[in-house]
Image (cartoon, rainbow, N blue to C red; front, top):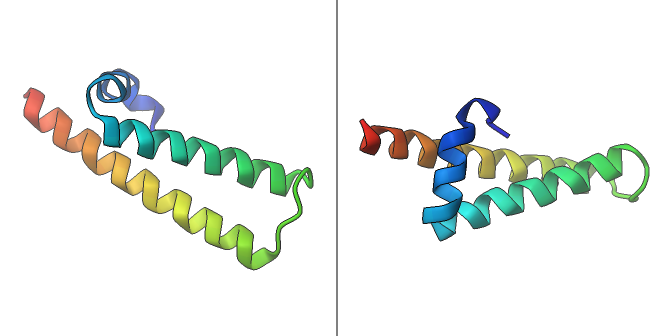
Length: 74
């Protein structure tokens, strides 16, 4: 997720507990979605779509925190 912000993500994971939780939950959802798409886990289309939407919301939240962090560092 957001690989171009690798340094900022590292710093935020160390200094911001909320960011770390958002990042961890996003990655867990990503793995669950990948498992469902590879038929390792059975989910309905609605369940899969719900997970994808939740993952996107978490990504948006993390991205906003990264941008705020970058502004603070400038």
